[in-house]
Length: 358
Image (cartoon, helix red, strand yellow):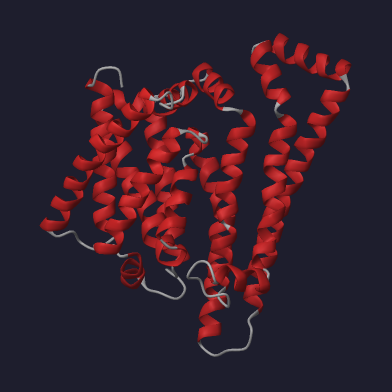
C-alpha cells in the first residue's frame, strides 16, 4: 500500500505540470496573448527537477564524505548492522554506490529544464515531430529525462545490489498486484492528461487522439496472433544470444524473479502482468508518445523504461517488441497494441510458470 501511495505522490506534480501546459496551449491556440500559465508550468517544472537535482547533489556529497572519512563510514556501518536492518556486505555495497547514485540523479535532472528553452525545442523539432511552440510538447520532451534518471539510478545502484535487496525484502503477491495496477493506471492517466483530457479535449476526443477504440474481432485476432509470433521470436533471439555468450544476464534474471516472479505463480497475477501493462504502457507509449516522438525514439524509450534489465540483451529484446508494437500502432490502433502486449505478457507468464527452465 505504501509503495502505491508513493507512486501517486511522485506522479502528481508531473501530471499537474501537464495540466497547466495544456491550459496554456489551449489559450495560445485560441489566439490569446501569451499566457502566464505556461510560465507557471515551467516554474513548477524547474522546482520539481530542482529538488531532484538537490537530492542528487546531497547523495553525491554524502557519498564523497563517506569515502574520505573512514571513521564516519565505519560508525554508520556498525550502527546499521547492530540495528539488523541490513547485512554488512549489502550495506557496504549500497554506501559505495552513493556517489554514483547522486550523479545519476543530479546530472540528468539538471538538464531537464534546459529542454524547455525555445532554441533547444526548435532544434529537437528537426529530429522528432514536435511543435516547438507547444508548452505540452516542451514538457513532454523534458519528461524523457525521467526515464534517463530511472535508468541511471538503476545502473548506479547495480542490478546485483537491487536483486539482493529485493530478495531480502520480498513483496506479497497481493501487494504486488495492487502496486502494478496503480503504476500502470497512473501511466494511463498521465497519457490522457497529456493529450488534453480535462483541458483541451473531452473524454471521447482524448480517446480518439490516443487511438483507443472498441476492438473489432479482426483487431482482437491480429493482436493475439501478433503475440503468438512475438513470443517464439523473442525466445529464439534469447536462445541465439545464449549460444554466443550474450544471453539473459544472471542479475537480470534474479531481479526479474524477485520483482515479478510471485505474479507468475497465480492466475490473477498472470492476468495482471498482461492487462495492466497492456493498458498503461500502451496508452502512454504507443497512444500518447509515438505520434509525437516517432516510432524509433518511442521504442527506445519503451525499452529503457524497463530499467530492471539495465543495458543487456533483455533491453534489446524489449526494443524489438516495442518496434513491432509501434508498427501495429501505425497500421491499426493503440487498442490492437494493448491486446498484443497483454497477450504477449500473459503467454510469457504462463510459460514462466509451466515452461522448463524459463
